[in-house]
Image (cartoon, rainbow, N blue to C red; front, top):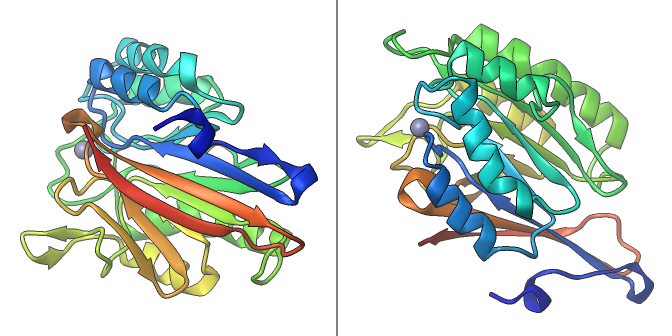
Length: 249
Ligand SMILES: [Zn+2]
């Protein structure tokens, strides 16, 4: 894919686009992340919905981010931690100012918020949360984002990035069962963010319109899976056209 066909920023012509590379569940595979980031050199930014490492420490986060940095685009790298990111990995990621849970990322055109961690199952991975904790991590941020940007069509789209998928979508199917967060589903229904990006359930890759929200689970970057998100503003309208595609190496 060439830069010209993918990246366009020309407010003067009344058209502008923002393109984002989504890399989830990297699980420490910096070499794959590097291949993908260099393949999409024209993207405006990179979003990571968790599991940057595979129970690695800060050094593993550092190695992955170093592989992505040359191609982070004008919007940079933002994301959340996953259940396989250890405490020291999470602390390091947050210390860099890239953790959406510590604060939203906002430009003139878009607002990105997020919450990490996996919905508690066996309780044996590093960062598991129950429904109440996921609600507390995501609810206030969504409420604030919604108040700030108004009803749809909003002044700017809200992009949510979580590790766990919302329950009952095409992004949370494991062995034929929905295993996502019911708190996230309720929040998605209440606030209708334009985009909800998640990961965690490797086998449930999807780009799926759930009511008014485009839900994206790119699948594990560790195996070469990724997604591209494009927002395109045309003419005078406030709301961008939002589209996404699933890609594999
Ligand atoms: Zn994972």
